[in-house]
Image (cartoon, rainbow, N blue to C red; front, side):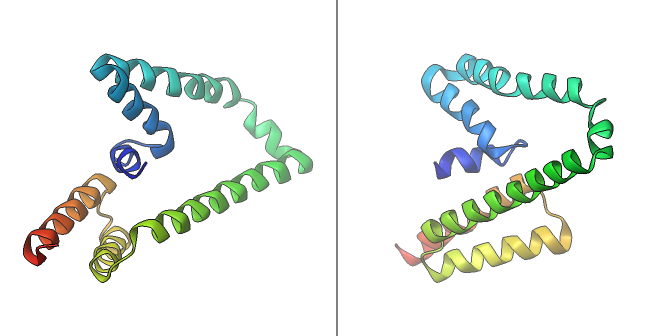
Length: 133
C-alpha cells in the first residue's frame, strides 16, 4: 500500500492513483491506462454535470451545511489516514528526521510532492547505505 501511495503522490488523488498502480501490476502499461481512465473519467463527468448546480446548492442552508460537513469529513479522513500511515512508517529517528524535513520543505518553500517523495527515498536509501541497516 505504501508503494501505491508513494507512486500516487506523483499525480493528484493518491487513493485514486492506486488504481493506476494496480492496473500496471496486473496488465502493464495498457492496464495502467485503462485503470486510470476508468477511475478518473466518472469523476470528471460528475464534476462537469454538477459544476452549474453547485452555486444553487450553496444558496440553500440545508445543502450548504451538508457540503460543509462533507468537506469536514474529508479532512477528518485524511487526518486518520495520516495518523495510521505515520504509525506504520515513523518507527525510527531517521524516519522522523526525513518526515520533519519534508514537512518544512513543503510548507516553507512549497516543494512539490514528487520532489519530496524522491528526496525522501534518496535520504532513506543513503541512510541505509551509511548505517549498514
